[in-house]
Length: 281
Image 1 (cartoon, rainbow, N blue to C red):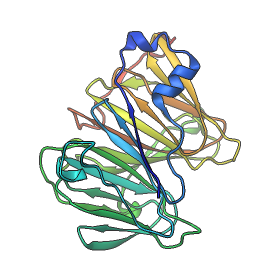
Image 2 (cartoon, one colour):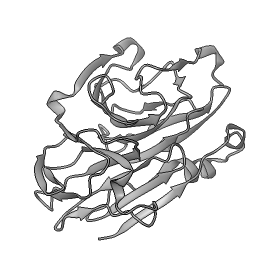
Image 3 (cartoon, rainbow, N blue to C red):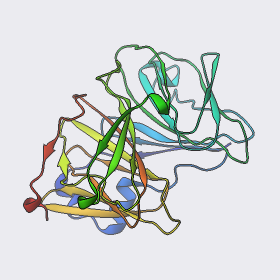
Image 4 (spheres, helix red, strand yellow):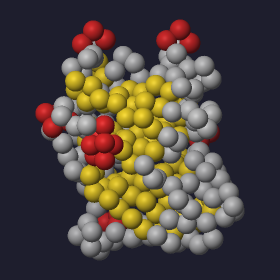
């Protein structure tokens, strides 16, 4: 088993204006999320979110972060959410084991001492996309089955953004300290995930783009300030960190899905500052 955690620092909008393509990719793109038998994480200074992939095969995997975070165990002062976008798996939380179907999720409380991930079939491993944020209070852990997620149909064919937002971790239905998390699926023939664009200065966001309709599909993620936008081309199962000052929208060459995760001082899902289309540059 290989474990890696890279650090990405916070950025000024003035700095981003001068970044080249390579610098944008180096600072904001996480190219390798899932690899068989490994744990790959990123620690971003944007609201101190930790996110990445856990892909167990023949052996169980457990995230162990103590010295790196100055704590006795990983979730001593953090909460964690995950969504499985791979095969059938399971999670054992402080000794209690539960099956995790494809697209099932989980919210795990601050103070949880052990979280062990497993796959039912090493040839078709589970792919746990995990997100952890600082926490101040222990709220109950809760399994979040895909069938029970809040499904919100959005968009229309005319604007090529017909999609369903599945809300898993949301303050309107459950208690968390700051983490919000969900899974959005675009319908065939649709490509835009958010347009008009918006910002939300009171929280940051990370996107994992996945489940592309075609192997040659590429998604272009737009970010930066409205008057000085940048873009990053993504392949399947890659993620982008979006600072709170930045717009975030994307378009694909075919339809795709993505997992979004947010944290910050405001948990209201629709707390957004819309950007006038004529202001985009």
